[in-house]
Length: 388
Ligand SMILES: Cc1cc2nc3c(=O)[nH]c(=O)nc-3n(C[C@H](O)[C@H](O)[C@H](O)COP(=O)(O)OP(=O)(O)OC[C@H]3O[C@@H](n4cnc5c(N)ncnc54)[C@H](O)[C@@H]3O)c2cc1C
Image (tube, rainbow, N blue to C red; front, side, top):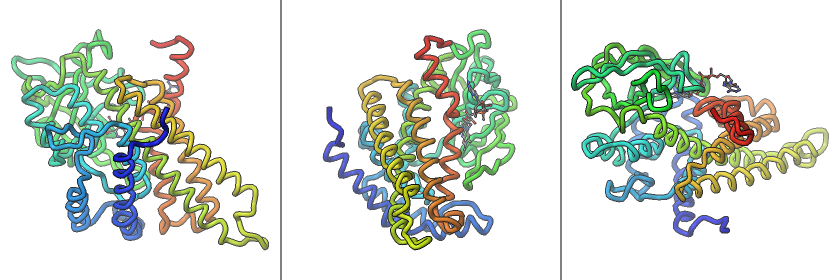
């Protein structure tokens, strides 16, 4: 058993750490100020262009994309290290392509879809979204009611999707829909690729979320698409969708490790300096226990996340382990950031510090990709032999 990253993966992690420290963290103060003045937490176009050029030059694009598409084909374990470092900043910058839809397309796209969608996506040329959730089906996606009906060489989609990230700017969206109501999640749900601007695919409204995030409500009204837009086999969309969700959950766990580590580092730097009642905060047992518990839980979370990643790299679905880290990482980071905010007192409540943004982003993570309670239920259901 080896608990260390391979040398080349450690070097990559160190490179991303430097990129985050030298390029992304210095942009935080301005991004926070713009958001505090009522704007969104976004990068200015010239910063985005500069970071894109630099990260590309550093070889940080397509890290887990297949080699034949110009990617580095890195295992999930290596990506945990990369995402831990990216998780340390609230500057909104992602290294393209976003892994989960890449994973889903790798499992499902046919030759034509690989050329039209997967390859440009792997090169970081397009943005994608996925539309699973509906007003009546979120934590339990098997309840979805959006229908796709075959009509000659076409499919016609009707329904309503909600909480969809990036829907307004995505070049294409994977829309999950029911193709056989009787079979439901067991052979009756399919995935479709819908291009932006397709008649009947309407982004109805932007929904502002906490933490400066946005999601969108999307209506599908007689949205007609050719059969060639069916992604994977008819009725077999649920399993690749679950694999996609697993990929995001591992990524989220890694982000949480990074966020929690940053909050702990800030706490450890501040606590010895701040004097109250004649002693530094670092001398108080309450603060010491926050520090000790945070370090212990971050360490446990890192080991759990690398374990889940190594299992996935070995071909295991690791569903139970992934549910465990989804719950553990998001709740651990929430507590650690909350304690750091508490130790900073009023300063921890300001929009001048990144802690509140880290907390908000972590709070969102306890809901998306499945709420904590649903993951606990999945874990317990397996152990108790109660699987549906
Ligand atoms: C920031 C953000 C981005 C998102 N992006 C997307 C996206 O891009 N695409 C997409 O399709 N969806 C997206 N979602 C939606 C997300 O996946 C759902 O919100 C999530 O699955 C929960 O569904 P729900 O909101 O309908 O809550 P519900 O399913 O109604 O659950 C509400 C609460 O009930 C409790 N609960 C539910 N089931 C159980 C159970 N079995 N046992 C115990 N308690 C339970 C939990 O406390 C849960 O929080 C996003 C959500 C957020 C917040």
